[in-house]
Image 1 (tube, rainbow, N blue to C red):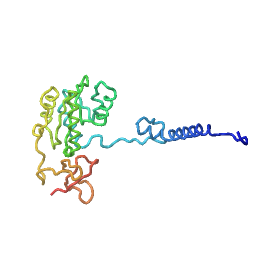
Image 2: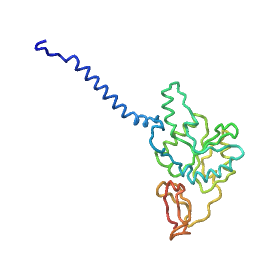
Image 3: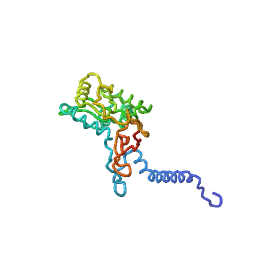
Image 4: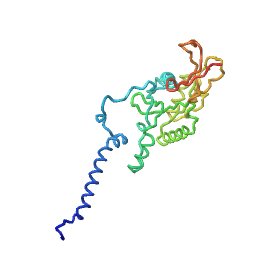
Length: 247
């Protein structure tokens, strides 16, 4: 070549390719932890310091807990109660396609029902129970409720939807749920499950919570200048802190 110069042109493209591949690998290495976390496959050992998990105080809302105590009496002789059961633990998808199975499962694995009544020996699910409060009047909850009802119907497991009430008759509740579990009519009407009327108050009917819309319950202030004064409180306290004065 003239003047003894070396033509580096053939080497430039491979060098550029090597540099780009190296840069891409370093970027991937930096992003890998975030990708793992987003996909839910990160290892707890990769986290630094103490794990951030804490025990929830509101595993069951006050309304759910109150209903659970009555439900325990109502079904004590024929069922075991499992609260807050994931639909992903109850059902599986069978479509003939692994991809469609995964897609169908992803639609239910983050949904749950309030209670599932199971056979006391085999633990086979017999009937599920959902408590409906004021939030179930929202359009998004109604869409969710319709989808969940269709899932239960497709799988052949009865689902009883019950409105939140002041009181329930354990005998009537047990009979209605036993009938639902054995293929009878599923109880839905509030009159079927209503217990004795609540004690008389200054209001003829509980008002809705100003924050979440649930029927409120009567409470009495225990501290401060209003100690001993009755008021309406949200049944989902402390998750919801809506209050109203008694008129």
